[in-house]
Length: 190
Image 1: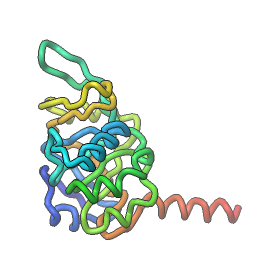
Image 2: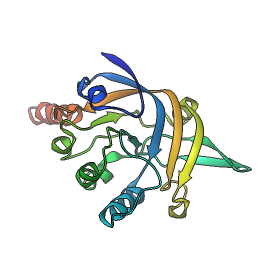
Image 3: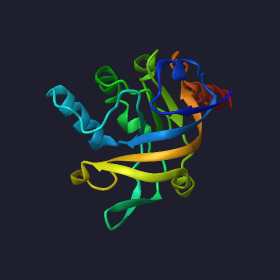
């Protein structure tokens, strides 16, 4: 199936998705890599309010290349980064924040239980940084630029961002893990 969804996402948006479905997103994505995840968790643990709203949010595992012209930022490239680096922080993040979708490449390990009934993992093809930038219509804000350009949290307004493939659905089906397991079984019989 193919879905065209608008952020912020609700529970019904993600529970209808199944592993292997195609998704296009319109609305706001928040980029976040390792250091941004760590800061989000640190602030949440200290009871501090985040400078952005993660209720119904989509987090894009991405370290974009940006260019500044005056007081405006423009996206040069915004391809996905490897999501497995955020796997250990994801269960805690989802306990504290009502994030509905994560986007990245390569899959995530040991998170399908944490995603169950609350979030999906969407894969985006690596190497498509310029294509991704075409779907990003503007940058509405940047947070924590002190972390550096790739680690800052960028609020990106997108139109028909995708195609994204549901890699882990909210029912716990992990498409990428199943593919890896099948490949291992095939190669062990050779």
